[in-house]
Amino acid sequence: MSSKADRENVALAVSGASGSVIARRFAAAVLEQGFHLQFVCTRYGRLTWEHELEESLDDALAELGALGKLTVHKPGDMASALASGSFPVRAYAVIPCSMASAAAIATGVGTSLVHRMADVAIKERRPLVVIPREAPLSPIHLRNLLTLSEAGATVLPPMPAFYQRLESLEEVVGEIVQRALAAVGLIGELPQGMQWGGGE
Ligand SMILES: Cc1cc2nc3c(=O)[nH]c(=O)nc-3n(C[C@H](O)[C@H](O)[C@H](O)COP(=O)(O)O)c2cc1C
Image (cartoon, rainbow, N blue to C red; front, top):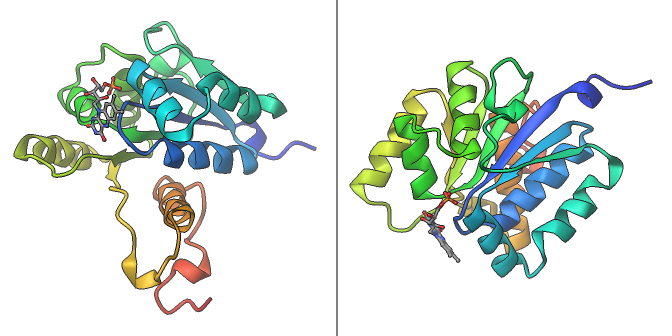
C-alpha cells in the first residue's frame, strides 16, 4: 500500500552558491522519506555542484532518481508544473540560495524557474526554506533575506550549532539538513540529539 508521502511533492531548487553538499543530502533525505522530488538547478548551480562534489550533476540525478521518484525541470522552463500554484507541492526549498537568486525572489522577478518556484511558494503561502550562502553579507543581501523572511520563508543560513560539538563537515551538513526538513514540516521535530537537553 502506498503511503501519503508517496503521492506528495517536495520541490528543491539549487542555485549557484557554495553548499551543493547540503542540497544533495536534502534531496536524499526527502526521497528516503518517500516523497516525490521535483528538482531544478540553475546553470551556476550545476557548475558549483560539479566543482564542489566532484561528480556530474547528471550522474547524481541518475542515482537519486533510481526509485523513479524524481522529476527534473529545466531552469528556463516556465511551462513547468513548478511554475504554477495549481500544482500541489507540500514544501519548497532553495538550497543553496545565491545572493542573485535571493534578490530575484525578493523582488518577484521570476525570470528563472528557480525564482518563479519560490514566488509560487510565497504567493500560495506554502512552506519554503531558503539556505543562503555568502560571507560576509552586505546590507543588500540582508535586506533581500529580510524580505524573504517577512514574506513567510524560513531563512536558514548554514551556521553550525557549535554547542553540539560536531566533529566533521558531514555532521554539520547533517544537522543543517535536519533543520531544513523541520523548517518545512517534513519532520515533526529535530532528532533528540539535536535538541538542547535532549540527550544523545
Ligand atoms: C564556484 C562558484 C561559487 C560561488 N559561490 C557563491 C556563493 O557562495 N554565494 C553567492 O551568492 N554567489 C556565489 N557565486 C556566484 C553566483 O553563482 C552568481 O551570482 C550567479 O549569477 C548566481 O546565479 P543563480 O542564482 O541563477 O545560480 C559563485 C559562483 C561560482 C562559479
